[in-house]
Length: 151
Image (tube, rainbow, N blue to C red):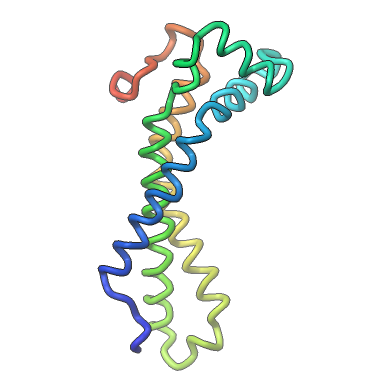
């Protein structure tokens, strides 16, 4: 099976996933803060733009960075798992099916994706939990830094 990849390929997929997921999610952290707070308390803001306005007035620009670190790390870890393990599972299942691999390619992709997503979500969950607690807790009820939030 000459189309099975090596660890260098998987590593590139994993690094690509870190950048693709971690950076993009961290970049939209300001929107995520407003969205999470509105989900946790629907009456807090009249609208998304109102949420931006209130956070800017009450917390300044720094208020839009709350939870950026667990977002960056968590979604980076998710991308690592999602992109890299998907490619690994495709090769594992293709090898396991042997001659029948082409016949069941779509199913193989589906199962590979599902397996990779389970790993990716397990990597994400602790960071997402920390991020949401940081962003939605009342002032003074939960730490506003990642290091303090882990304790």
